Length: 328
View 1 (cartoon, rainbow, N blue to C red):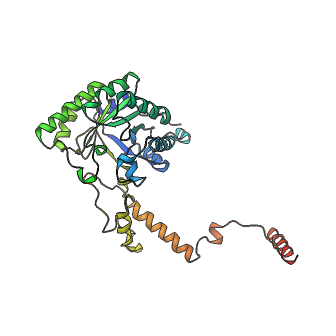
View 2: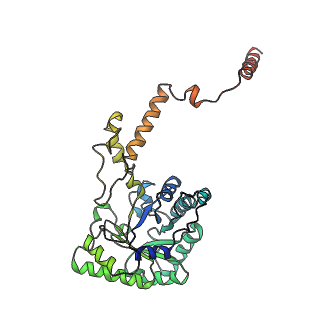
View 3: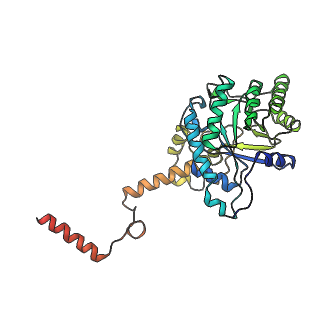
């Protein structure tokens, strides 16, 4: 049995103090949740990028609270699977953080608190992530009175932009960088347990990380934050848009083998890197194509490999029954 305790807010703070990088990976389904657990990530984030990556929406703004809760419970069941508790090789259970969708925390502190309480109750998450700046302070303070941990998402906040064209580097000027720093300090003082810092210059992220006492998790913020987060499907170059399919269709199946990605594969954001030996999206299409070809060629299923058998005497009786019915 794995005797290592699950990751906690307190253990993450200790890890930061020991200068050990914190790993955060997003997951939206059961298989990815299992992979996050097996990888030994400290944080499993069910992010609102669920809307774009898994549900095909054009914006995170359309994600409902119900959808977020549904997917979060599935991921929770994966990272906390009972069978893994008895596997001595399995890494500790990661901290489950659930993103609050657009519109759930923007109306009032009272409404936001109700929404957060519902998420925590129904998903059993140890923390929630909320996009915002200093205006989140009253909400973070309120949630702290209930013992609810908040990861404040600052810098680039995708929920606040209507389209991808508006997504750009933040805090690129001294005044905006200093405002960001003051926002982070205010959110820390309010009780946030961590900061997610997105798309800011590396040196600004480094300076902020050096002047806070809570973990700073970066995405597009350079290598000097206390930890890093990436979307699980980005890590393996999976299918995330019709453009990926169009690129794969222009690549011959035999060309995909041993190649990282099709040559026309859409370029990901600057801060994304695939760590898979080949594109999972391309591999997925290759496998589906191979299955379709095998069905059409009648080479799948094979009688000796994928089919169930019946005793010859039982088959003879069955055929006799068919013949008798046909003759009557």
